[in-house]
Length: 462
Ligand code: ATP
Ligand code: MN
Image (spheres, rainbow, N blue to C red):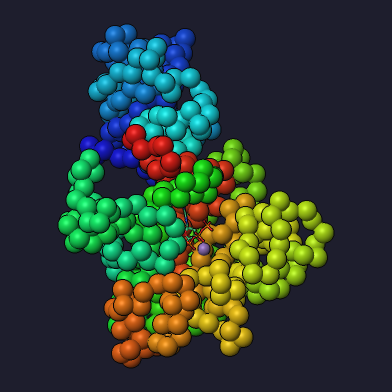
């Protein structure tokens, strides 16, 4: 007798098999006819398997009739065709109880809790339908990410989590130190990080890009996929202090190639989720965001809009809509502007490109107009920016002067400049925030609900 998943037991092919199922009780209902219906879930899918436990079972009165939501069980029995909604059910030959869950105390006994409340129970929320579905969809997206790049012969490279380069000033940094914070060594009144573990100030990485460039300019096509950290003290529904980022980097690639890659990458993720997680996606569509399946299906079949920043500014200035933040050429777009463009004006994903040089980091390639750089952001409805990327500056002299312009010390980036000194090539890449992708696909409103253990200001208990 083999242990099979609930997912497998619910398939018609399992009918007639004697199996063992292990999971947690969702509900128990007793029938007048002297048997009980147990709904068992094991996380392999959204749906439960219905187990029929007859009073002839030796522990029927003492145990089976006392089962409540959350109890863990092993059921041995035969899979039979069901007369009910589902294809199959299991007729139990035995039901062994591993662990009880006192209904007076088990918090998930009550049917519905708000997502805010469930955040306080990060240790129990994966037992709910919503968080089970999020976990499965997130897993599907990760598999899709690796498949997409592996099929295209990208090398998966691991970039460091601890770094000494304050990498592009992309966000606020978390410091990594072993110094005694109660009594740190000082030099001229300031903390002397030369005496720290790495002999220099060091931080948790905000992006693996600079290191990915090192590998791309040696091996061609690479991607990194790992945790990144930003100590931005912004309590928004789209920012985490710890999030996962996928960053492809491609040698001999320009901005057009970069946009093509980003577009086919996102479409592949959306297609895979629709195909591989139909039950979970139906749940999100019914319960969380009524248009998510329709939106994803439409996106997979149509082209993203590609719009220069300057043109987007014209659209925003002329649209007649009152924004909280003013729109002027040279300032960064706010979330309200991005969402207007993708949701209202174009009604589809938009790739904005060629941003003003003054608002973008030093490594983005300067255009011939000298005013803009080869940056691109991919914007999607509801979420706004989901991808940020650029063609990188491959000309040594331009790169050095951009660093000086942004008050960085070129000497500190000597290794990055070496990539331009020795066999420089055009190259490009971008970063996709994994959680933003999960948010977009599922329609979950808050980014804290699409990562198992969200790290935000003031929250790190679990
Ligand atoms: P935003 O403007 O939304 O704060 P950003 O421009 O600072 O993002 P990038 O440095 O371009 O972000 O990072 C690349 C991608 O990483 C973003 O497009 C987004 O998907 C994701 N990302 C950035 N910051 C966060 C964060 N704090 N939490 C979750 N995802 C993030
Ligand atoms: Mn960005």
